[in-house]
Image (cartoon, rainbow, N blue to C red; front, side):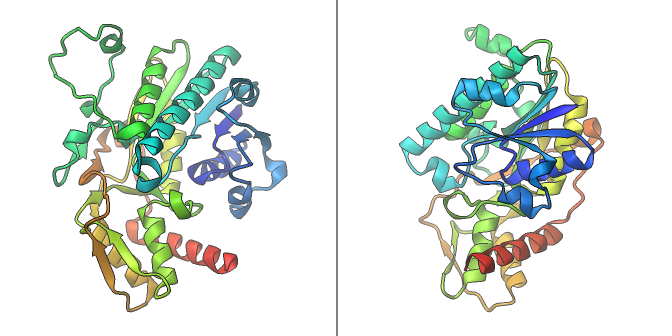
Length: 342
């Protein structure tokens, strides 16, 4: 079976490509190599000869069409994604996330329809869940917190007895939500939608796109040349899942893909405070690090944790890598990268 992975040179995508190759799958990687090269793949032991690499700007429809051509199955991971500041710092950042991701998703899905793709696994996000429910401690989200009914969009005046709130997280969240809506309307294609929570591990991006774990690890490694500053008071919490567990879930979701789409949360199911992450990272560093909390910085939602009951039952899947083990692997991978770069 010929499988396309959009964003296959990225963080999660590179790990997915490796796992697909281990299943003896024929893999096509669609990636804009002008922004991100194939070093993530080579770092995982994937050789250029192992995959067909199609240099693609998915914002251009004809390029998306060429990238998807010949595929039986598509894992659509490509997106404009990144840190809180990268996606949400300004109105223009929000707009760029919305517009770019809307175009990318529309082009990929249209190409899938035109070329006769049989299965799609879409990397959606926990950002689709209503923001108004994310500012109370211990907020946990099951798939039922946002059940899309295409009728609601076709007839927006139809009353919904559940009074469901549609209020995603900024431009990125709106784009992912509309990606799910598009897939709900697509017929005769088996589809799996993964509402992915916070993933971490090897090949995480650095710099402006870095998420909290990679950011804090980088600060710890560079300390004391760089201060160890945590945005907020550390009480905000998230659900952190190690990347190999995420990939395993995506592969299982492909098997269960259906029409209409099947949607599942992909997370650890465990609530962890940023303060806990900071303290664990300091412990791994072995340094006497002073943690500085900066409550003037934006922190996003107070709490966002996955209910993974459905994923456990439907996919016969559960996270295997503990937070301590995953942090250890990630810490020493980032340390090697920083030493090499330095």
